[in-house]
Length: 188
Image: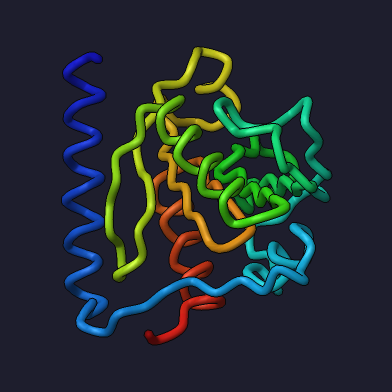
């Protein structure tokens, strides 16, 4: 790992910690996503207005799961790309990929959550009293051209039958995590 990567990881953890303090994490919370929802319905609940949506997402199958995601017990998934709101005549950048994976049981989902974290070398983190995995992935030159940044932030959350991956520009990926917690977070 290069020094640039390590500095970015430290800055991301500090930013999340400060945001957690500012949001007041004294109330314990947990995520409760009803298992009756489809992955598409989870995305629609979290992004009812779709602030950055440019194109329609796609269903995920076993062949296009994130690196490390378990195939065993996988029921289905949905991936929604979000682009910035620049005018059509300007270059648009991919700012977020939001993926929801659904498994037959919470045990399969937890195993996949842990495996994704290992595959991308993500760190355990508590944000707004929700356990998640977070990290930074350096992008290839092609990835930089598509996103406009040299590193993508990763946030992975496990809740019941679901694993949610928020990948992209750090501010947008964190916003997606906040929306997820605001939508499905409940007081313990």
